[in-house]
Amino acid sequence: MSAQPRVVVVGGGIAGLSAAFRLQQAGCETVVLESAGPEMAGGRMATVNVSGFAVNRAATILIHSYRELIRLIAAAGLAGEVVPGGDLFGLVRDGRVDRVRLGSRRQLATGGLLTSFPLGDIAKLLRDYRRVRPLLTPHDMSPMAAADFESVHQYATRRGLRPETLEYLLDPLVSGLCLGEPEEVSAAMPFVFLDVILFGGGFFTSKEGVGFLPKGLARQLTVEYHARVTSVEERGEEVAVTWHRPGEAEHLETAAACVLAVPPPQVPQLYGQLTADQREFLADAPYARSIHVAFGLDRPTAERAMLVQASRVEHPDLCAFVLEHNLSPQRVPEGAGLVMTHLRGAWSDRNWDLGDDKVVDHVLAGVRRMGILPELERHTTMTHIWRVSPCLIGRRPGDYRAIARFAAGRDPRGRVQLAGGDILGHSTTNSSVASGERAARNLVARLRTEGTLTPERR
Image 1 (spheres, rainbow, N blue to C red):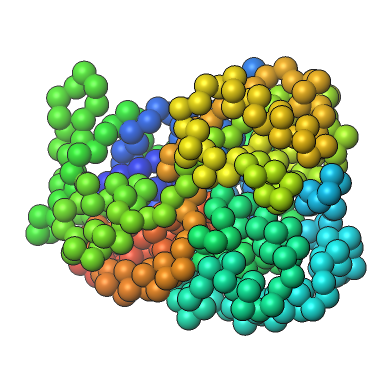
Image 2: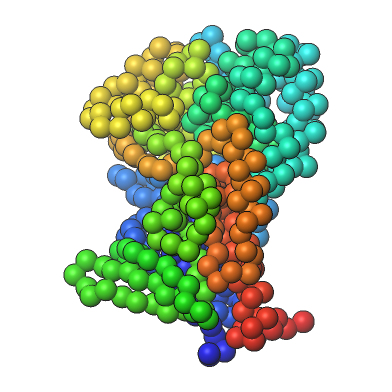
């Protein structure tokens, strides 16, 4: 085999692009096979231009505590595209927005957000958070198995939390992370978001939206777009990957190794060399579908927060609003505003085929009911609806134990490595980057042991 072993990466989301970039850095010849076109580079981390607005597809928030992602940005030479982001966070309550700056733990302790809840409840949450924080790892949430035995609602009942703490604090934390409901989601999940609030260190973005990173990586890699993979098979000392593109004959790629970076339910369809338990785990990934609406405005909003979340008490369907112009004025044309409105997963699932006009009408009726963001009705110049499926993982009670079993059964030296935050972690950009880089490290270690990849120079 040549001094540059070939590695095929299936999937051009941020996990796949991260893996390909790190493999290429290590000296591998890489090719990325992506089923969509170049405008969708990054998958859920893609950003497209709509009437002069850079509209993110799904991922919207980048956090300074995302260490793996920040290191990748620097390694790819993209640090110059980063701009600082706002840090004002708000919760809708009784027709008002309680705000706090997330970069300051002192203000969290003294501001109007946490202090609006019973002191005893906050003390319990913080004690439990300190206990589980060492278990929060971006690439593999297996350690959380020890704390995974009940739903958020069951946790609140067991700990004797007041109803307002469940509905106005824990519920928004859950819906903001996975679009899920407290009765269905594992009690471990709110602590993931609480970690962002307490130790996120503030936010950053790019004037081009979050898609600046996957687009920047794709420019430095060989990416075959509109390439639909049909099978991945280990054959002794190589991996065979079959794919096709409309209007072309079937392609067969042979390589020393492969990274499968596609949503978990798609893995068993492509890669038959899994155990029955592994197939069941991947096929059972608890995804929420998402319908969300971008509103381009002819002015910024009076609301100053960059992220506003709503309890289902305030509205049963709407759960979050990302105000991109407050995240950074560079995110929008001068003097304009951009608001991404997010609906809960259950509503999106029930209304998947609802017409665009009716979706917009439902959102507008919701903000009117809550008494927030009047600019959406009065100053909208553009609307864009995204329907993303699968979108976000919502871990159920017992899922972290299943993650631990799956992780223990995977071979870190296998020729086919899986990548994606949704497999062993959560649907965050950092989890996906960390997972992609871990897959790359595993393959580099194997190829160097085999002698097909030049050892790292020291």
